[in-house]
Structures are given as structure tokens and as C-alpha cells.
Amino acid sequence: MHLSSLAERPDWSSLDKYQESITRTDFLTLLDGVYAPGGAWKSFITVGDLAATIQTSAGQPSYILRFAVAPGLIKPASRFWRQKSQLPARPEHLPLNGIRIALDPGHLGGAWAKMEERWFQIGRSKPVTEGDMTLLVARLLVPRLQALGATVYLTRTKSGPVTSDRPDRLGKAASFSLAEKQQPATSDALKKEREILFYRVSEIRQRARLINETLRPDLVLCLHFNAEPWGDEHHPTLTDKNHLHLLVTGCFAAKELAYDDQRLDLLRKLLSRAYPEELAVAESIAASLGQATGLPAYQYDTATGSALKVGRNPFVWARNLLANRLFQCPVVYIEPYVMNSHAAFARIQAGDYPGKQAVDGRMQPSIFREYADAVTRGLANYYSSNE
Figure 1 (cartoon, rainbow, N blue to C red):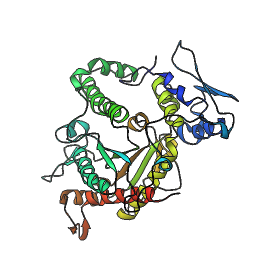
Figure 2: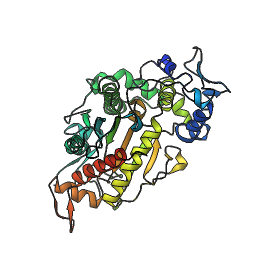
Figure 3: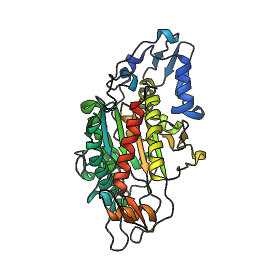
Figure 4: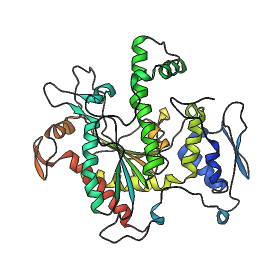
């Protein structure tokens, strides 16, 4: 069995509810156009006229996924989330009425931020810690979304981790991970790998359990700030680069699909039909954030195969990230502002405040409220429309 770090044994029977729920044409369109472009899936999935044969684990039988033979014969599959068309009618002044939204403040704050390397300080300025900033944005979003009728959850409410794991408990997994990557298991390498498995893997997997088993929302918004390389951690530098992008689930590479659990994750996302909802929500929020911030769209180097441009909005891309593939509902990653840019840094140092004040030579709202207000408008615009 070939599994990603800290992954659970794949339960292929979880696909049973999707039997005959998708046509062959739609299955291939989503595979090629969103989830595994460039034929990344072809070593692991064989598509016949009536069914797909899916590689499971070494020595185990393949999984056979039967297609619906015609669009009119598609069988509905149960899922805990609802797309916009399945929601009850909403009053005009409450466009989010009845919608369950989970906010996932990215990373960790406080003392944990240094371990994650999402912390920097310029001279004697206030330290910039992404995990604290995303939690602030989440807290600003809660009353805004509730005022429009939404039920809102947070995956974390404090700076510390959700997982009960700690780096010193992950030594065996760290040794295995380094061996998998064919890297020497020096004491420094093991320490670093234990920390990465703690904050980047165990923490996200625990948030996924919370989302999938307890909160069960209609939508997850993963809140982040972006960053460019800042050089020497003891003497970080600021950049003139400042940009915006949003991410939906997709663009699995062949080397990622070689992991049994990631093949299952891809198929669960594809078959749940999360992509149309993810894309529509992402494009609406992107339009609102783009207008509010005036930031240019970030451009991935598509030659690396790590990201795929999707939809019509220049800000929206597909990537295979742990959270967006594990959260079993529509997920939108939001990445506005480069926190170590000159422009964003000045606004972060100004902190949160109502209205506008002079920052970096002009009157500007709090960067945190600008973020929260733009996301709120994007959601309201999407759910207000019947299209």
C-alpha cells in the first residue's frame, strides 16, 4: 500500500454511492479538463465504454465504477453539502439564509507561526504572523455572514493547533517520509520533517475530520495571505510584488496519483460534482476582491504542472492541496495580498480599524476589513443570483 504522509487506509467502498451517477463523457471531461490534465490519470484509471477500472492498492482487486448510460439515467448520490440550486428560497435581504459556511483560517499564529515560517519581522516593527491575520479576518467575517443569514463555523478559534499531535510524537513518520524522499535522516532533517508533518499534515488532516464528520458545511473558505521569498530570516526584505489569486481543487500530477489515498481523494471530489460550485463561488469572490484591492492576478508557471488555469476569471486556478482534496465539499482557497510587499506590510502594521485612515500616503481601509468585506460581497453576489 502506497500512502501519503499520515494518510488513513483508503476505503474504496466510499465510492459505491456514486455508481451510475455520472456519464462517461462527463467523467472524462472532468478528468482531462480539471483533475488530472495531460493524461496524468492514464496509468491508474482505464476508461471503457460502460465503466472505469481504477487501480486501488498493490495486490488488491481494481475498483469498477459504472457509468450512467445516458444523461437521463443518472442516479443521484447522497452528500452532506448542497449546491446553490438545492437551497431553499432566500429573502432578498438575506442572500445567505440557511447556508452553512465553514471558515478555515490558514496556518497557525502566536509562537507556532515561527515554526511554520509564516512569521517575519522588519527591524523593530510588529511581527507579521499569517495565522493570526487569517484568524482576525475569520472573526470579522463571522458577523458579516451571519447578518446575511448564514450559519458560520470556524475550524479553529485560537492561535494554536487543532490536532493533538506534536512534532516529538511524529518521529517514526518523519523517518519514513525522509526515506520516501530519499533524503538523509540527519538530526536536523528529522527535526524539520517532524515539524512539517505536524503543522502541514496532521493539523490539516484533523481540520478535515472536523469538516467532514462534524461541521458538514455547504462551503469551506480557506483564508490565507500570500508571500514572496523574503531571504535571510534574520534580515527579511520587502518586495514590490503584490497580487491576488484563488484556488479550487484539481491538477493532480501522475506522481501524486501514484499514492493510493490521493487517487481516492481525486475520485471523491470529481464524483461529488464539487467543481462547478467551487468555480462559481471562486469567480464571484475573485471579482469582488479584484475590484476592492486593485491587485493584479498572480500567474503560475504552468510548465511545472503544479497549477491549471480554470474558468474565465484571471484570478482562479486549480491545484492539488491537502485541505482542498480532503474537505469533502466545495472548497475555495483565497490568497490576496503579498504580506511581505511594501504595500501590504504598511497596512498590516497599521492594524485593524474602522473606516479609513492615512496609510502609506493615502486614505485606506483596514486591510483585514477590506478582505472580509470583499469576500462577503462576493458570496452575497453569488447566492443572490438564480443563474
